[in-house]
Every structure is written in C-alpha cells, then in structure tokens.
Image 1 (cartoon, helix red, strand yellow):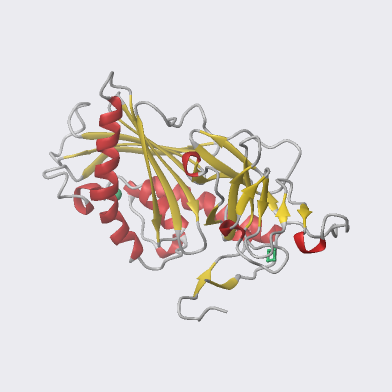
Image 2 (cartoon, protein in one colour):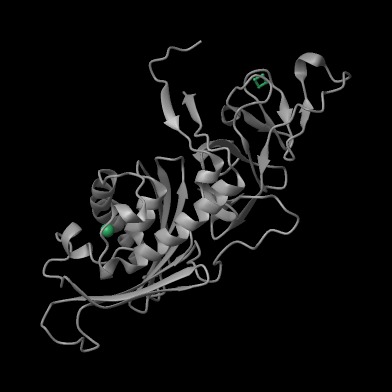
Length: 345
Ligand code: FES
Ligand SMILES: [Fe+2]
C-alpha cells in the first residue's frame, strides 16, 4: 500500500456535465505506439493502446479484477495485459486469459473492461462521447481543420481551467490588445466591424481590431480575423490567406482541460517552419498570458447571467447559450445529478 501523501482528489464530474454525442480528440496519434498510454478525459481515467492491426483502443484504466491501472501494463499478442496479476483483455473488452487459473478453466463472462468507440483522423485519436449506436456520425470538420503532416505543427496543453472558460477564451478577439499587448504594441482596441452568427452548430465570427478614428472601417486598416467554432469544442482561426490555426478542446474533468493547437501554413517550402514558429509563439508567449487570466477568472463555472456582456462578446454569448441549453437537456435526460468525487493516485 502506498502512502496518502501524493493522493489528490480530482473532481471528475458526472457524465452529463460534458456535452454528449460528440467526437472529442483525446490523444495525438503519434503518442500512441506499442505501449499503453493513460489519460484522463471527460472525467474518465482511460487506457489507450493499439491492437494487433494497429487500431486504437480506449478502455477504462481500472482493471476489472481488482482495479490496478491498466495503463501501466503492456500489450501482448494484440491484448492488454494488467501489470498486477497478468489478466489479458481483448480490444472488445473481453478477458481472454487469467494466468492463475491456467488455460483450461472457463473465464467468467462478466470479467470485462468497459470500452469506448475511438477513431483516428487528422493525426488525432477521437473518442465518441455519447450514446453508442450502430451508425455514428463521421469525425467532425475533417475537411475544414488543418491536417497533421508537412506544413503543420501541433502542440498540446493541459490547463487547470474548466472547459467552458477555455472555449470562451477562444472566441474572444477584443482581449488581444490588452492581454497580449507586449506582442501587439499599438494594436487598435476598437472592435468594429464585428459580427457573430449561428448557423446550425457553427458559430461564425468576424471582426477587425483597429484604432478608434471616429470613422467607419475603410476595408483595409486594422487586424482582421475570422473565428469559427463548431459547437462545442472545435475552433478554426484564419488570418491572412496562407495561415490557418485550430484549437480542439477536450475536458479532462470538471476543472481542467486539454487543448490541441495546430497551425498550418501553405507557404511553399517554408510552410513547416512558419507553422512551427507560430506554434512556438502561441504556446510559449501568448497562451501563458491567457492561462493566467482564465485560471483566476471567477466564477470558474459561470452562467451567462454572471456576466455583463458587451457587443464584442456576441460570439461568447452564442456559445454559452448553446452550452447551457445542451447541458440542461442532458441533465433532464440523465438525472443522476451526482458529481463524482474520486480519490486518485
Ligand atoms: S488487478 Fe488487474 S489482474 Fe489483478
Ligand atoms: Fe489570448
């Protein structure tokens, strides 16, 4: 038995706290090799591994035998072997070997590990969070989001900030000349024009940050940006004609969030370098400034009425409206209302 010193309590959240019936990225494909990987996503402690065909598998990390962490095990003959007593589980969750029982005794049928549907695309492993059904929708926005590979660069961040607050930050244009003033000296603070509209599950925003000269926009000056969000969690940013950026956001638990950033540049030859430089500046310079502000913003789990929103927050207002409606519908459908508190090592 270990000591309690490094045990911590994590507020995992109830299943209905996370927007359901959605594909969430949970890991970069390249991080999943021969060894199992343990991650917490959507309030579940998961083990990810690859079967004999190289297909990704996601299962609950706690071994159904006596609860050891399966992510500390190994993959043998296309099955996941628990590090504690060597029970082996197939990709479909069935236990296929119990070493202490030998090979002739039958294995009890309820000895199974719970699994999740996963797919791979755009250099990411995606997990279906929602009802399992015969026909699942395709991975979202695969034709819109920048792919991994040549001309792109990807980084991931783990933030002690709840999911909604991270999404709020991603839709925010008018913080830039203040929160990031070191990198944008002299940037205009007037957001005009600015539009935000909802089309299906997509929020489209377009805005120009410019100096307040008392005149209508001349169509040229200022910093022009377009942000689109596929509710709840995929963000696409466009500045200029050569560069695209995405943020894909997945709750780790009720209090923390995992973010994948990717830049892609279509500049001939130099695209990869440009994308790398942009990701470096994003992750090392810009994002730490956002993190410091979001981490300390109160309340951590706001409702729309906690805010006093202004015109430039219209995209954020749309996002919160969708979010609140969706969570309310989920809580009505799954009225457990219980927040899972669990001690984790
Ligand atoms: S706890 Fe996994 S095999 Fe015993
Ligand atoms: Fe920012």
